[in-house]
Length: 249
Ligand code: SAM
Image 1: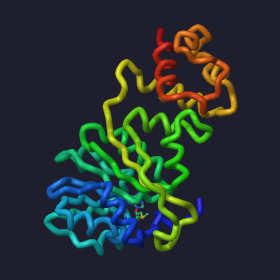
Image 2: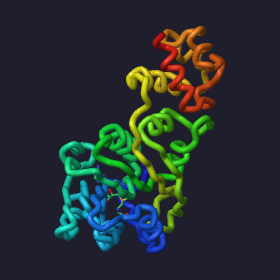
Image 3: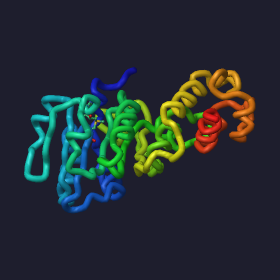
Image 4: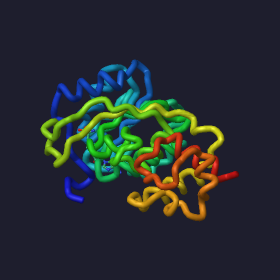
């Protein structure tokens, strides 16, 4: 995997911090969940805006060094073990984070799946390569994560950040994305939809007819308007939805 234990690359560039603040647009009294506050590079600027920050940090020493106040609550916890329904019950929250990259995908899966009704928007820094995958449907970089995200939220690529903005610098470029959670699509069985995605991308070089054997037949491909010879990375989100719908009738 490489990189620092716990993905500890601290922001060390005032301009990038300002850029993140200008897209996160914290408001006085607004509730913000910060995942991995570290040494507070984003936390304190967020507090200056008058927002109320709930900071979840797994590293005991880092958590102990943050200074709780009326507007800052620090919780020493692994975000992947957190009960978001309890933590964010007084929401809605905005999530702001420079994510620990070793767990970008599990964190995204958790906050998007469990965040409905608790979180309305997220501004997240992540590795550039994952950011690209998320915002490029029907592209060779697309994968099940692309469509998983689209199922739960509208993702927008905001800007790229070089390794030199962090201390110590990571080995890869980073990017900041905004996610706006929306209701899952209507007339869709999530379990079946994610099954189709998983099966399609498990063998991304294969034609869908072969990957989805037993789940979608030729007649159902025709009804969905998707050629069964296509590969999963050429499909748009709506086409996966159409396949799921057709596969039920
Ligand atoms: N926000 C700080 C900044 O921008 O300088 C630190 C960002 S650093 C990339 C990621 C932070 O997430 C570290 O402080 C790390 O200790 C914390 N972290 C790692 N794994 C975590 C987990 N499972 N739950 C909560 N925090 C975690």
